Length: 310
Length: 173
Image (cartoon, rainbow over all chains, first blue to last red; front, side, top):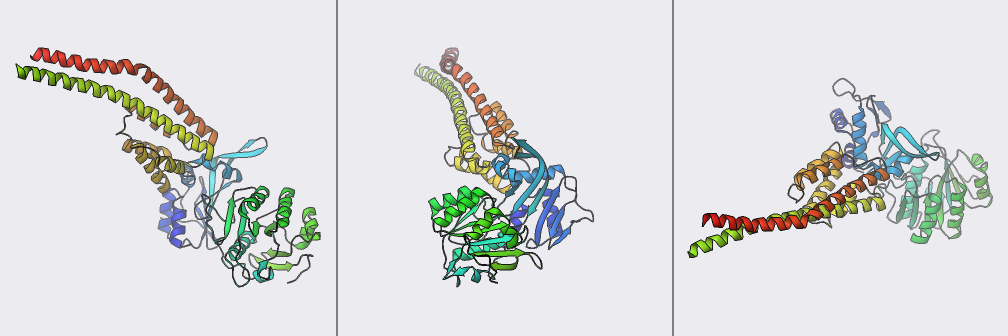
């Protein structure tokens, strides 16, 4: 994504006063990771891995309640009601796949989060794709130019979604290792495609169909029936219903690309649902990630029996 | 003598035309009220069914409307997309002043329409739909009242037009 485009996408959701502060401060948007607006607190930026407080006139800028409200108007296109479902999850995806997280007073109905009001904090997380991050593992999860059923195992913040996205892109476009094929993505939290009005903002490949904001179990079945994908990709599977839908997809002849929370194969085996899957040799490859030395470090690749192959 | 007759006829024709024009204005006002009622029912339906943001709803409906309502909604779509004002109310009121002053709606209609802008963009769909429903009900009531008195008013305008023409002609001739 060009810096100009990214800048425009971010700037236009910020309140006018914060826009001026950021313009005066003169930052590079390709290095910007987060903008944090908290009512009554200083404006914070996470910039090139460091937390900074812009001080254009030698004094930091204190964010007001009005700033937060104005920003919310811009983020929601003046139509908060249209983002009711996203607000339940605590974030809204904006154009460019950037994610806006928010906190405030949660409204509960029947013991479930219904919505949020009195929003006091906004965190704009700038989307940064890492194209090519799957280059290292792709040769190990393909056979005869077709991918294996693959499960990416990783603790949070170790780059599993980024890796999954790049795998989807490469499988969809095709390259020397894999023949380009139709990929169906069930993107329940808009993390993979970063869809904005249904259109993926991240690079997910030219043969990819994204079902945005759809529950995974239901979405997998919908995709099989409607789009005949050769590969189905889902992020963070875990519930019995999702595993059941995954089994259905396996029986339909689709290749599966999925991720799950976990730090090792041993930990995965302790989860009854996955223990059964390993025993049943449902997945042919397991890729374990960590952030020991760097985010997205490959700890090991395992075969269908769970034996380490690299 | 001929000139007097021709002059009298012209006076009567012109005052009758004024009377007719005024009665047509009353009819146009009613028509515009019915039109915006229909427009808001469409907005209600779009939000209820698709839960889209105002920008998309206005952009979609703008293409199906007649002027000046089409231009009004197109302008709202652009303003929302470009996020030109800090609040929806500002955008809404400004665009009403710019585009709907040429419509057949009266000042009080426009003022009520502007008031509606202060209640738009609510947190949840139910409340937003409730606000729109309340506004269409208000319009219904207003339309009923106007429709009830329209026929006698139109007759009165036409009669007054003709009678005033005759009266002026008699005085002058």
